[in-house]
Length: 149
Image (tube, rainbow, N blue to C red; front, side):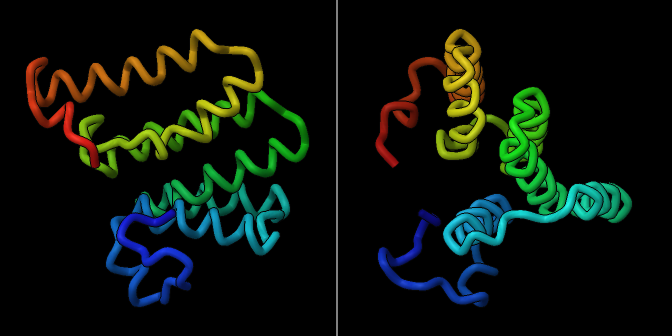
């Protein structure tokens, strides 16, 4: 669910433009999944990564890494899926302005893949790293850590 979106209502392009880039990409990926339009040829996906690098478009890069992860998941290439999701999480961290602002939803796809592969220690480390980043940014005894969103 896109933060701030009315439940059960379609989000317009204008409304979507108001959201942070990471949330826009996550929303687009959910829509692609819902509509079944995720599959693109590998060559097109690779071109999207190259174009994103050339233009410096982080939003395009994030979408390309998610698209590649979906492509490789359909082709049962677990290492490529994990690699692209890790790159996506790193990019999300930069785009959100640090681990303080990264949400559980942002790392959920990577955590799910690691869990399915039986890499539970890596899932724990992923969440611990996220929490460590928040503690370093806010301080160990910050009331902000304990407030629900």
